[in-house]
Length: 429
Image: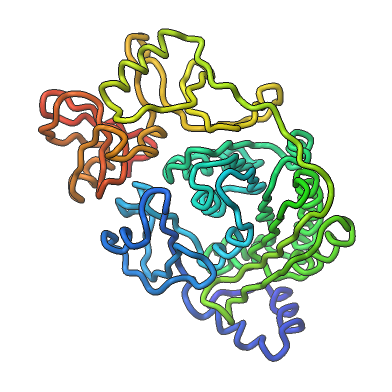
């Protein structure tokens, strides 16, 4: 059994009363595991046909999510292909409450590592503005990597504090998710390191931070917009009291509903979320990026390469730092703000000698056999590819997307019957 902090247990016994023994017993069982199918790449039905993972029922509060008792879920070939995201089942409850739609402006304010943000991306289906923010740069890189693996094409990733972001996006977003940094009580079984970091003082500190973040989020929501606040903790200071304090401080908001998933009542490690709607105010616009490429050599090299490699055209071509991007329609132009970010799909750039276009891994992960020249491989060859090895290939020479069950793994370049591996070294397993 997990050894829990004494103050945590005393508080839980006081607040839960007769439910406390059942709550305590929930810590005697292994952590609940789950995965979410990436419907940007395949349907649930298609996933069920090809997955080697033993599925153990659907998660009732989130579509496309399954329970599983298997470990090492990040080592499967299908994971590398972005077919699914490993997500604790309770954590999947918040994003659906935002009810996002294609074409909306959506913000995931505390987004790393990307579970909820990529969940929102699936509902947006590539249309609209999706801003994923993470204040810690290293965590923002993890976020970027997961967005890339899942093939999200309309994300704009920022890395700054909520207060600064609120000065840029005043009354801009239709929907905002605040999965706030918290004391992490729902992570005690999954991440043992969270236990010694917990204290009543850390709970109070988190509550103050959450109040500030929520206040900044309120400024960024447009009139009639929806805000979802969530935590993976059980403390009233961070959950119910946070909600009541927010409503008291922001009378323009209405609490629609709230729910608390407790580990002794549901099949999950626990989560809290509250749904608000904003009355009155306004909806402001920002200047949008106008796609353009000034470097003719880069553009010509890309067009020559794409004519040989791609089956469909890529729209929204834009240039930044001597590299080529595909930018979604309506992406806000933040060039005048000092906000570290990435946006759209990084397509690639010129080789070191400037003679040819070299495609990026990000581009490969958004493509399918209908959109590009591909080479389909079996599981054994896929495992070799993910280790960085070459393989024999009878396709004509040139760049090809390596696919497994039609899902992209990365690029190879076929030369005289050999597929040379172009998977980035940092992604090899």
